[in-house]
Length: 496
Ligand SMILES: Nc1ncnc2c1ncn2[C@@H]1O[C@H](COP(=O)(O)OP(=O)(O)O)[C@@H](O)[C@H]1O
Ligand SMILES: [Mg+2]
Image (tube, helix red, strand yellow):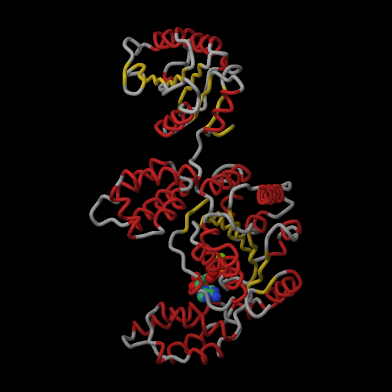
């Protein structure tokens, strides 16, 4: 189904379409668009609008005796063009109403070559079967970036509070644009209105929009908007990954990236569990200031929220509507491992196939960040060069990285870093993952708190000695992943 834009509308008229049905959840936005389009057609003037309570009106002036729909259509039939007739509320009348449907059909037919166009607005997808040949159905869809920007520009001129907020925060307008993507303009209007409240700031307005979006995504059951994301300063080690992030930012500029202009296709991050793959994805979104949408693959495969293919398509559509954004496909292999690749009659590979096709063909700037623990489960075509910009391998942290990770997590617990020897801790935790280091710090904090003394080096060392890192019990598996990655992936840490 085509999307309603001014261009699309004008093209339809130029090829002689006289009857359109627009599926919309925002009549006012639709009206605005049609009014703007009509203004570009010679002699058409403002649209004439019908509602079931007020009848026909044009520019606020009512045409008497047109509340009755049939009379309204008779009036329209009697007019010589050009004329844009916009009918609201029709969905309540045109089921099982042969006279009405006949009139609409006649109007569509006699409008030809007269420059008369009828547009029916409704929320439902349903239209009478017998109008099928006459009617063109379009969907309003969500506003494009340009529409949002234009709307905000207008709003700034009319609304002194918004103008003032933009003055105090020069990045506000662009942040509102990004936050409003994937939402209707009414949400944006509401967010702007909150600025009039005494204690609200621009940042609150942005947050309100993100909250809206989070609710909408949550309803899908398979997606979630991750709001509070840490930047790369919360990520120990991984110099290569950090450099990769920075280099793109230098090349395209943060403005370019966060508006989607220089946004790369995506990365696949594989490697040992608990070493910061998820953390890195969050850092990408935070550094590039993009919304982060997490797609839960195991729920997609489980089919709880509809067939996996349908839910995946839904997720892609949503991501494109929200774009520019980061779509995080967490543990991309999880569905495959739990269900088995072949036992399902190839469903998993079909799903991955549609994922790859979409990645190849997507038009909107959606950056895909996929993470995987067990990469050998993934079929070769996922890994083929060109699908992802880069495949990264995240291994166990080296000594220097472990020191950094200790520092990060100790700082998070407000420990006194001057009294703690992070170098020594790093040296004693060979084979520990980032998650295990975090665990050590948290457990030591907890113990110290229970004993009511400030945390000491000794508390930490005790926890270290009590931990058997997974890398020991899973040595074989990690070796396998490393061997695989050695040939195919860029290590996340260390010089390239
Ligand atoms: N390199 C790291 N720097 C800082 N913290 C880390 C690092 N790696 C892991 N962690 C800690 O371990 C937790 C789990 O990491 P996560 O990113 O979920 O691992 P993965 O997705 O690779 O299994 C994180 O929330 C973080 O607190
Ligand atoms: Mg993870």
